[in-house]
Image (cartoon, rainbow, N blue to C red; front, side, top):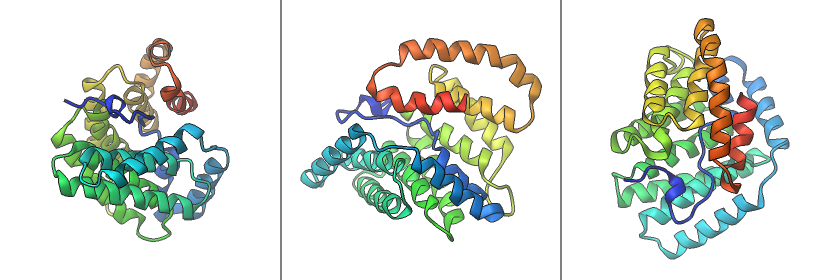
Length: 254
């Protein structure tokens, strides 16, 4: 059973759905100008690590060589997403996202039961949505669809990534009738992610952020100290270059 993309031969960062930039697009119907300004500000201060570029180049070369490999395809989709996360303009972000989408769709065509391909397809949809003036909310529905499939195929993949991403999507998207935001479903998926992988900081932080967003002050106060201690312990456990970018995101969120 594949527990995490970290265990694949290609290695590379495994993202927790910090994805702070693309979440802004969920507010498109309310303040598009603020969304685009915020996304640009994040991009300007986010350098492209040499490691991300190297992993992207290696994954792309492998996929071109192994055109019938499901693993090579979805791993390139992951690498394209990773690099798109640090793109400095919409043109570059969209190009990388589309490469990732094509690769993941190819993987799904080869193996419709690939949880990893569905998962990274959704993440690349999110990157593409950042670049859209129109049509971003349609991509939200596509993300929901592929992450539901991820959960059905392998609920523990990427540290319960399917549940985590769905939870954040339902938490931050506008509600009916604009979009699919739903507090009850957000709570269900975020709690399930934490239940399946309580050792992963992204799961704990995503649920903690939900409680804060929903004004559940008592729970926030009760869990603040324990969450801080957990992060200290996790920092000693999750070390190395592959975790550096994750910790940058988690520290900022905390």
